[in-house]
Length: 402
Length: 120
Image 1 (cartoon, rainbow over the protein chains, first blue to last red):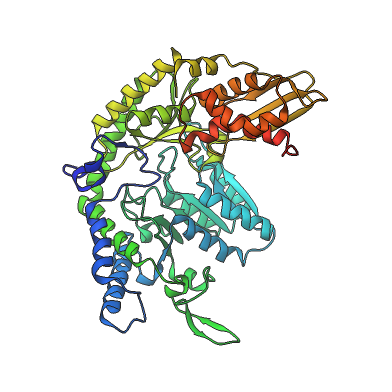
Image 2 (tube, rainbow over the protein chains, first blue to last red; image 1 turned 90 degrees about the vertical axis):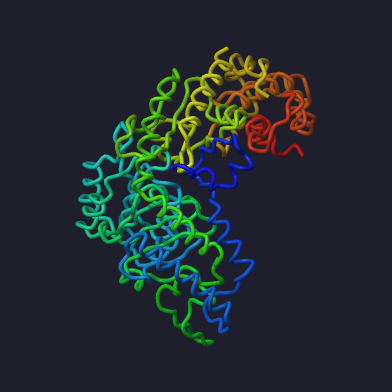
């Protein structure tokens, strides 16, 4: 992982910044910024239906990224890849489309570690369609309680199961292959929220046999404003569109509209072409480092961080306390000091952490907490930064405890 | 902003607890972290705050702010407190508060506004 940090302009401008909010959004490498800049400077044009040269070139670049994403997640067909505004938009598209055909009394199974992006769309749909939403509970060490999860499935035979690949608070990697398989056994459609896993581990749509997989560009070193909705072809073909407008149509008359085939059906309106190009550059960037190297870096940093956090007295880590089956995301509380006070004081030392519920209020409530501090690492994170964090936390304690 | 005076207020806040016979009360929540603060007041017929107390878990800034603000508002008119409260809190904290933490220090003021929605 040498020479990675140097590829991120923000660290040239802010050499001392310890950026620990990667689970919220990562920084962007030169290659991503340049790809977008060149697109705007030299190739900007709307995609599809442009009969002039730069329009065709823009379309080619845009569609090339679809092929890249297909390969990145090992999907079968390129039209199974839909560009959306991000993970939240992807989930909303699926919930809106699926729930149309769900009936009152149908069951939905989610889990306590899901992000609000998974929970809130289903709660809204449940109100509209009178659905029952159930939450799989967690074990005391912050992992999905598999027996309880299986029992929920066999008891309720849900129509839909939402599976979080990696917790954005605890860093836990869930046994998703098994979870997807048991959900399929009871006939559920399964969506995998891969927002946190996409930058840390390979995704294999075919091996996972998942119905929908969603993730965002901006959490994997790409730009904001674009994400991916993968869906099995036959499911996407049945799913009604979510955004209606230009490009997603075959024909429009005063009387009716015929929708376009996949993937255009789900890409209504002018697409964020520069962002998609940026996502393509981000995928190339991640692949160039390679998941083998990223996972090694993650394992080493996880072990180092866990050890460093243990040196801080009265620090209580949420979730797993080992580096097994986790990504380097660590949430914690410190007795007597509020998460926001810790975050503000760390900021003064040039350490950017997140404080609050991290869009996972259900998880925090299940732990009887309002807020925690979250440290989430990326490819450019270093052990020296972790040392600085541990020192700064001791300093915060000294200040508060007096 | 985390000077010793603020931390001392956090460790030993004034007016923390519940009133026996409040005639006005309200709760405000901090959207940042879900922390809740309740405010109880006893106001006389002339609209003067005779007693006040607050309760809740919170960060040092919100607790210190509530401590100093409640102490300051005693024997003052509700109307006046409501009018100048926001500026007064910033004066009491004596440090510039960035937009990210403004919610925290203004939490007791938000509760006060809720307790007297009718007063301008």
